[in-house]
Image (cartoon, rainbow, N blue to C red; front, side, top):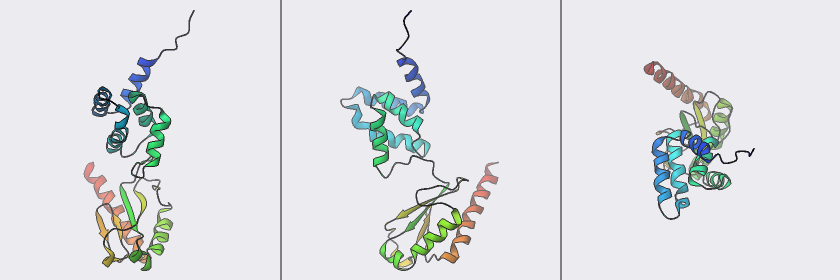
Length: 181
């Protein structure tokens, strides 16, 4: 009796099930072209665009379907700053740490945000509401120090203003939840 070692169809089916059909179709189109591996970054962008981040299951599926070693897929995903390996919060908080903002107290604003949220840069609160990130410059030096939450720019932020600012977005999230019911 011989052992069955060829499970390619099963692996392919599992990989296809881990990704939305449009991405599976995209990978299929890429494989028809010369050097399909050159489309890895654009494929990962599509996956992140769909899920908001790159989970191990989806990266493994991309590796299988594109026939690229999983270590290479993970290497690309961890090398480029744009890719996220963990879910991000409903509200992304970007604190400007450019010269003008830093000189006007952005470091103290950061410390207050970290204290209030219980997270560090690159992390997301346990409730999935906030992610905290640093930016080198938001181009609004005249409003320093600046905190950007989603697309909203908040200038002249001080540590004392942080709790009320966060409360605004907590209330916004509650309101959105009520509307979706």
